[in-house]
Amino acid sequence: MHAPLTQPTAESSPLIKARMAGFFWLMTIITGMFGFIAGGNFIVAGDAAATAANILDHELLYRLAFLANLVATACYLAVTLFVYQLLKPVNRTVAAFVVLFSLMGCATGLVSGLLFLAPLNFLSGATYLSTFTLPQLQALALSFFTLSLRLNDIGMVFFGLHVISIGYLIRKSTFLPRILGTLLFVTGACYLASTFSNFLALPFRAYLLPFVALGGLLGEGSLTGWFLVKGVNVERWKESAAAAAK
Image (cartoon, rainbow, N blue to C red; front, side, top):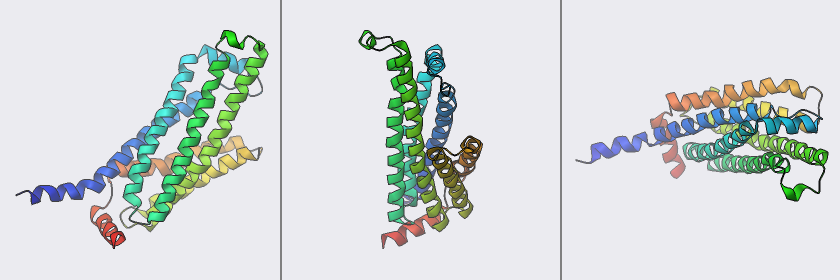
């Protein structure tokens, strides 16, 4: 009597994982974009006083940008778990690297977030900071803000490797369209090109930002939409899982 009920549940398991991966990836994209856009509007290059004024005049928005990035990191960790469970039948070793790259990127992002909060401490007007002059505190705030951005670039290297690894597994899989893997290759290449251009201070690095955003939406956005709408081919996923278990 119970067999007809347990079989559909077992078959729906990879679909549930795909839906959950899609949901948390969508939340990552939404909160991450808000954090990136809101957080990037405070800095005035080379002007510590103007940057400090922007932060203090819009402190709530500044804190919301931090919280958005924190939520995005938590959601991405959930994405990592569900994606690993979906793709480990393809190649468990590469899937482990997917997790490793994601964890490195998320850990780097958390430290970047801590540095992002530091300017609020320097500009708080606390009495123990009275040994510093106002220009010194403003310079420290800008320095920590800039370090946060550079650390974020380091995190993007790991996220670039993360999505490229996922793209490889998708192209090797039989239960997801290969075109999604190709789009993730493009996404990873955009992330890596942008971050290394920042590291090398290349003059055209600012012009790469639109391509990074477009590449991210093209690759990660397409996979997110596919997970939410289509999921995975359950029968082929089961075949891959059974072959991997032998």
